[in-house]
Image 1 (cartoon, helix red, strand yellow):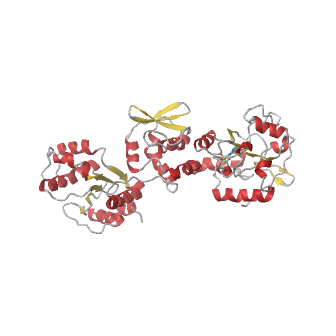
Image 2 (cartoon, rainbow, N blue to C red):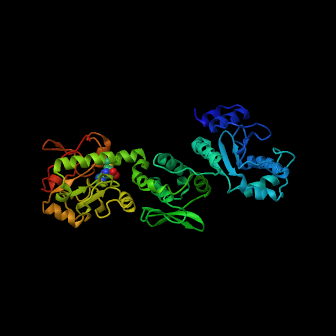
Image 3 (cartoon, rainbow, N blue to C red):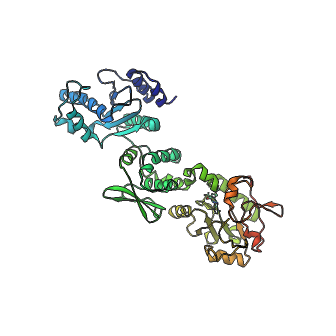
Length: 438
Ligand SMILES: C[S@@+](CC[C@H](N)C(=O)[O-])C[C@H]1O[C@@H](n2cnc3c(N)ncnc32)[C@H](O)[C@@H]1O
């Protein structure tokens, strides 16, 4: 059972303390006036979620003040815990403030004066890191444990493994505060935010950008600026997580944009990235089937390339054309420098360039690069290399995918569901080698 669930069932302050002691694996502790006392951390605990973090720290700092006055040991960290929330702070950040001895404490720690609460609150506001246990218990536990062993409050790294959870938390704490932004753009703003070290972005030309205006973060997307309604969630979020992610994860994280697209939209677009072991297998099969020189012999077009994983092993970029539905995916490819020398462009292979009579006319959108049009016209050997958006002919996702053309017919015994119609409509006949089941 999670710590949060246990806390909800606790019926006394003792229960709350014991649940935290267990979750944090505290070995040598005492329970005295100070609720939990170890060599490294002192805790103030409450059995509800009603007392503010500031009030709890005010009580705990009263004990710290006493210890300082008596020249006794003060631990490196101070923490407050209750059934809903927890917070941690370095003692070193408050000791200079307490040393001035200007605070008028009450008779006891729990009888603090309003004056003490105000003075403490205005000082500690930026020094503690707070966690909502319902959503951030893992982060609190790992940060506190790491603080005990390392002596530092180490922020949680963003990695491919926690990307989706971090994104969901980012949406709740930051995304919802961004004024006027569409929900479907959250992922782009999230990437802009995390791929930034506070001064510069780790990648040039990401679809969205993090800027600063009057010392506040603002996001720029499609020429519009988006401001935060409140900065509190932003401050609290970035006190918990470290950014940018480690350099070895950055491109991989950007390429996993599909994992952040809401499930509905993802199944509608068939937007699942191609795993790299599948890419390996596909390239082995291609060499087996077409010979080891196939990249020299064929013009290659991936017309649903997403963020370009399928061509990550491709070496002959001069003969490579990559297009996909979402312009943002093209931007991600550019930012991650994927297949730099290939022609990469936005194109809806099911709907673009079909005239009223259902015939292909590349002059309608003029999106197809000249090199590709020439290759089609000159009947060059073209290899259509795709991991298509999966959708069954009978399901509704497919019905929505295919807006104009009927792409569900059968040609020469090959099911052409969602396959590019120009292959036969345009008089160009290509042999399709299907590398399925790899
Ligand atoms: C299975 S994914 C391929 C992923 C890609 N190989 C990668 O690893 O990123 C299918 C891709 O087709 C795109 N797509 C869906 N409908 C499309 C359309 N009508 N025209 C072009 N691309 C489309 C989706 O957005 C998605 O990126």
